[in-house]
Image (cartoon, rainbow, N blue to C red):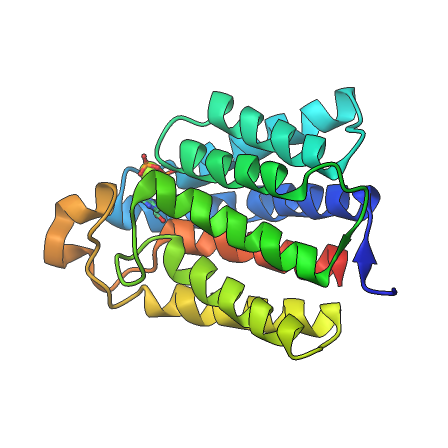
Length: 211
Ligand code: ADP
Ligand code: MG
């Protein structure tokens, strides 16, 4: 089947995510300065740079190992809410792929669903709380729908990115109910959520590297 991704493609996905985070580090920190403590860009960039260094120093043998190393590195290098949240997402992705060497579109749908479940298990946020869940959840649903409808992987990934972008924009008027931004109450409205922004880069990186 053409729509199968191997370990090399999955590694490109993680590295492209790291590149996008580095490129948009200041923007992420600016978003976090409005409704948080101005460290989301620095947090994510420190974590993803450490992930790239770990992958450079020892190549993973299987997708499960790639995701596990990514998750463990994020948990151990990122202080703040996003470290454990992204870390748990990648650890769940690792558990979800078993010992598979390649992933097809259905497997990728399960991987993305596992990431979302990891984040919600850890952070207890639901859609509407103004978090990364507001971008990731509609993206996972759109991806599943596209794959279920028989669309090619590249189109399903594009659908996921569009849904994430819409979910990201929808966080602007929301009042935060989870995380640091919730301390601001009503004053958190009118600002785009930093985590919803970074997780949209994760999906954009997937579309670039896997589609
Ligand atoms: P901190 O808030 O500890 O400074 P970061 O600035 O790195 O950590 O990350 C902030 C982002 O984490 C928020 O924009 C939000 O998307 C996400 N976040 C915070 N709490 C939760 C939660 N309980 N569930 C899901 N995402 C959350
Ligand atoms: Mg912060």
